Image (cartoon, rainbow, N blue to C red; front, top):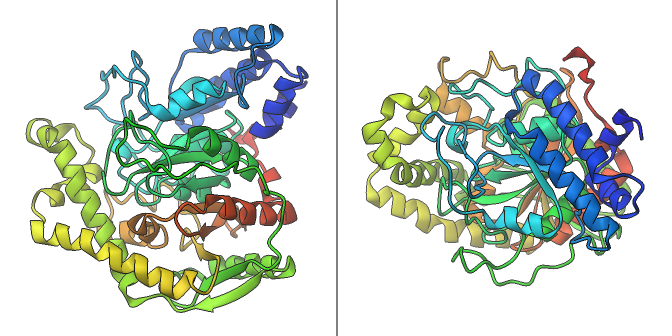
Length: 475
């Protein structure tokens, strides 16, 4: 198969082709290695790539398949992941200077489960320093660049994951989401990204940021790709006491069932408070598609308590992040980038009363969302980025005025979902006038990821946005 055609396959298509022996794992992996080496530097997307180890793993996968020992639904599929998923004996720098030489002695449960499903882990992908940023800027390793236009941001903090999957350098990647760090880069790069329900996926062996908010999940080209990866990594893990015992459904089952009769809530307050007119128009257009497919659009008023959720999420991240970073803030403060340091330092001085209040308000927000939204509808539809994706220069908040205001605005639509612990899916919804992607977010009840994926797939099938790919010839 020609290299470009091979790169254009979705993860789901490649997995099926390898299983049918129409494509070898070695062929696919060699193509990924070549693309990571060729285009990765221009995007600043790759933290580390061991090409020979990747090719050896692919040869082993092909040999296993030939002898009848295929080990799972992702057998031989090359993936790469955000550089905060620990693998024993392999460095994980987490986008930082401080952990540049850190070599963990454990392997994350998420990676172990992907191993068990047969996937190959061939590279570490760059990220915002310590996963603490919404844009993709990183003063330690440099900003990551959007493959649709390298002058623009990728979104953060799973920035290398977003850029690499969108550029067809790799077939899928794990990211993390504490305040939007899967959904923001997925939206900025034209991908599907799913932030699961808090506790749906084990966080063991993943660099922590906020114990109360961290979630992990995939960034992929298509909805079925996301469903495949989520099915592989979800479920109870004794090593993570926050992981849920709720059964894991087959996220692919019913994926093509459509949305006829589905009630989709559209907010009349909060989420559109400061949304750009161009983005708002694309959101309305996506709702029109859903209506044409038989969904019922239900306008809803957001609860007043939601207005505090963004700020409370930032407070929790600051306090819990500062607790994790405490020893380095004392001994290695000069090794942090300015943006990271500016977000961690307030966590050292927030009164305990404010932190406890921030945690306590969550129950009220969850109850209010259930009453205002989910008592009347099945899913909530919102914007993700409130404005077209900006350039790297104009969003360099570490050196521009309005640092706090900009960070607050970028997470306005995503942080409340982390605060409530709800699942959210980023769904590509076309392009703004600057040629960059935009997306909407579907939010559901706890552990209702299957319904969100079905709704996302219905829109994807109707519009075909997932088939769009950036032109890499300019790189």
